[in-house]
Image (cartoon, rainbow, N blue to C red; front, top):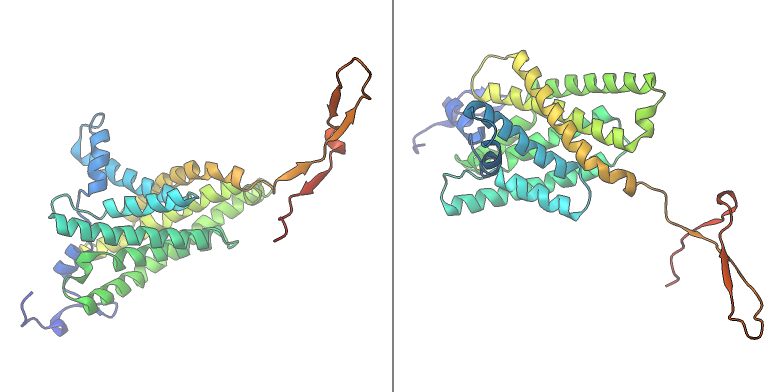
Length: 305
């Protein structure tokens, strides 16, 4: 962009100044990232169509990131940062650009993981969680993309804010999250609160709702940035596909939760009896475990400091 360009002559979208062509270029991810290239090494062995393989690679990469976001433990934080960093690197860029983009992507992944840990662990409704997580993910994605700031920091911040508060994307988030809440709530009532009582199902369906919201809103943003007419069928397809992928990812990572949500450890009181020692015979010690219903359980107490 030359120094003589005037931002005031550019079209305005939701209060921010944009060049339509540059905006689409700024937000559009490369068709192949370092992460999808790694995945392609596996999928190319059984998927011959390049177009189909690109779709499979994209959703697989997203599924890997989602699994880390919904998983527990320090390793999940490392995975979220690593996968997000790799997914932001263009294999065709030079080494310096790869390092910078990877660092931005890694920071984005770690911060997104932090948001998921806070919101995902709260007691709020699944649909509200999905809306909050989808909005936060969209905001962080725009804020930590290098191409977004190619015209300067201030225009880049405006672009990020415009993406975060995009009216059509927010409406899509609300509609999708509302529909997910209604469906899950109805199923929960129909099965006598089975979903609410199951941490695994709650965890998995939160992933489903997040996928529906993020997939639909990302497609809305993509259509606007590419100057396409709004196509609700594509929005619904992307939302449903991403919802399916994130359901599987959350289901896999959710296998950790039953062990982590068990009740606190208890200490069993064991009754020990010993037969009196008789001269010439070795002592015999018998350990009797009381019946289950008679076992006394005592919560482990912290040792005094």
